[in-house]
Length: 373
Image (cartoon, rainbow, N blue to C red):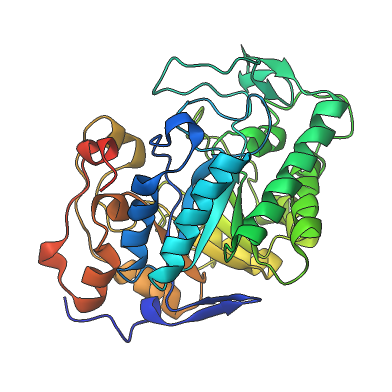
């Protein structure tokens, strides 16, 4: 492959105060290497290596808000408390020293236990209805007071992200975690104003989270919101089965202050509504951009031949052609592309792609999850 320096992938992107040199985003990936929830020098070096090697925007692993049961693994980093915030300050300072841009992914896991550890928080898991999946009880349903405190915790995290010097932030609203559990009728069985017979009503909590974080950072600080149709609890789950339903889901979130929608698919090249004719095979990010006018990030097995969950079972995933990606960027289907496992395995992935040094790429394998390379 020849150099891609002049391709759409390496064109700059600007939005509000965010100024990126290219369209490559490091996707957030849980690493569970933060001892006692505190990012240390190893975590800072891990992110800095990607910043040094041409990644346009780095999104951190999920880092949790100040709620008692916001995480389900003791190695997940905190985004509250002086020690943790000091650790994140070292991370962002190192990324900036390397010329990079970065945002933390702000997270609450909801009523979801980890499949990697038996650890559980001291307080019960909390979610909209105390369900980990449809018909699967876990933890407790959040009270009005819990919801108010959670909104406040998201707002404080946003203010801290800006104060520490991050360039943006991302809210985790995907993959069956807290915000997504409110979206999903199977896990949202509430009888108050946070549920109803439409996805627009179930989007209320997430819209309030976005609004609280927007109020904390002001109008010019970019806010990214990660979303998905699929859940870790059900790969076939869909929140929106038509473009009209998707618009009713997404428009309230953009109206609340989300600038960028990070649209997670298991495979980015798959059309979101394949049953519709004449749609040019738009993927999730393509439809989100078309329906809302917001900037979008696409993601899903970029540069890999394997499936996401298969990687955790030890199945390899080698580098694949990027022709479809470049074509979609060229026609402005979406604005940015997030790369996960390929960048986890090879810190130099973006630079090697830019220079055409494909033969030197390091393939992803399950062993890569065990180190901060």
